[in-house]
Every structure is written in structure tokens, then in C-alpha cells.
Image (cartoon, rainbow, N blue to C red; front, side, top):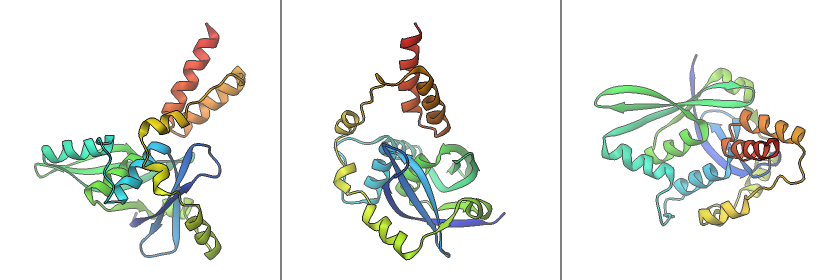
Length: 205
């Protein structure tokens, strides 16, 4: 299967999932785009990496990973989005250490956040683009430009983001909570899943 190189086209607020963002990747030599739903913290990390002039006061998780890798001469050579199952994209980091290549499994949002920091190319397979790629019409491209977040919305203090995303489940019944838990797990939103799980556990005591 042939690999297709992707660029980051933009990030916009997700219209279908509250508190999430749509990372839009586009093929370098073609018109197809690959939209991927990611969380707020990952969107923030990707946005900060893209904006070279913005430096957070303390290193983010992906910055720490980059510093750690640099210190021990580990290089991320490329990122490959290699699988799509039930709407979830699976990715691999192709790393090199001491002339030895290793493949590490990673969430796609984390992989892309690291790819930017390492200046590593991003690829996917042709069959994934055939299955999940879409062609944006001119009006859709304009809509994407208009819906892009403002940098100041994401490059805010993480504490502010946490406060804004504080969730309460007082009005939800157990059946709805269990459905939300399944959805959170399937979307790999483990932070939300943990909060829902804790709420279910409290009620079942």
C-alpha cells in the first residue's frame, strides 16, 4: 500500500462534539482532506507548536517529550496514520535511536503534536484516504477559515481551560452516563471517561 504525505490544513471547533476540535489534514498532491476529532489540550499543544513565536511559561507534555528525546538522541523520523477502526484513527511514531529504528504506537493527536516539534513528515495510507478523506468545496474551505479558533482561545493558561471544562453530571441518569462512558472510550477521550466512571461509581455505592 502506498503512503500519502499530509499537511496540517487547520483546526476548527468541532460542530458535532462539545469541547472538541477538528484537526484537518490535507494530502500534499491532491484535494482530499482528512478531518480528525481531537481534544482541547491536544489542539492547544498543536496550535502552540505551529505558532513558533509563542512559548508557554512551562513546558507542555509534548515539549517535555521532545526535550527528553533530544537529551537521549532519540529522533522521531515520521508519523504514519495506519489504521481507522470505528471512526478512531491509529498512528505510529517511527523513531530512531543509535541507528536503530523503532515503531511506537500513539494517539493520532499526540503523534501529530510531536511530528510538528520534530519537523517530521506525516503520512497515511491510500486506502484510509479513500475511506475517510473528503474533498472540501470552495464554500467549505471558506467556512473552515472562518471557523478556525483564535490563537488566544487555546494559548491560554491550562488552569483556565480546566476551569472552563469542569463537567457536572447531576442531571444525568445512570443509563445516559453509561452511554456517555461508552462513547468517551470509543473516542479515546479517556479523561472524560474517567470522570464519568467516577460519577457512576459514586452512585452505585
